[in-house]
Length: 360
Image (cartoon, rainbow, N blue to C red; front, top):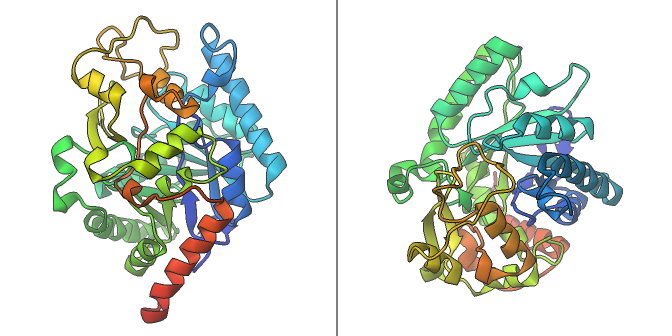
């Protein structure tokens, strides 16, 4: 299995652990993945909620939590660490600057177009910027804006397909349309990126994401031309995952019939595991009382059926009656909780079994 090279960063394995919030991938999971030779990602979505003053001092609590999580991860690993940031959060700029000040290796930015992301990067910073995209048009636009306004290009991109967990960059009707399948849109993105690389004499590795679970999946994507993959769901059912055991149990028990496509309060479709909480939402029985955070630009708490931040926090803590779990379509493969080290070992064995028959 080839290394994943992003600028001067070299990951032993081409595996990026997906950033999962709220509280699913923090310093525990990220440092464990980094120690195994992958790229560990701390999700900054709602990270401040674990601070005692979050209800009345949300942005300061968030910045403090960011510093704490990055520092804790650094104490546990010498590997490559990144953060996942949502561009739709209200205090996006402050969050980016805080992560950079802690000398995080990579910023993965999704849930919107990070068109001004380079504006927050000091000239003496070596942080890598990796936008998460869902189409060739998106990466073309980002490259155009970054090149013209900031004189730089993405250090890599994550191409996230419609089988991913969490919020999805597709319309609901596109999720089951074969024209929007990951393998299909990858061909278009690879063509666009190759043209950009050739024109500007640069290298932009493509990391594919969305439903990727096995070593065979990695082999397929790298055979097509991907430089690496992003995997979230597979790392949830590890001992080191920062979410509760109840959260992980939902993954293990989920079947195909349990996967829902929901309408999120943030205005995007999402893939999640059906439970009583989501059923009550569908029945119109859940309503937020108030909003302490005003954390998302796209969320109107006066009309939203529930506070997604609180719902995801409750789930991560194990209170599934008051929350729910996002997941990718590959959640049906989850069978047991094992270590991150064993997960890597299994993935590599799966990859090698396919590669012996069809070498890359």
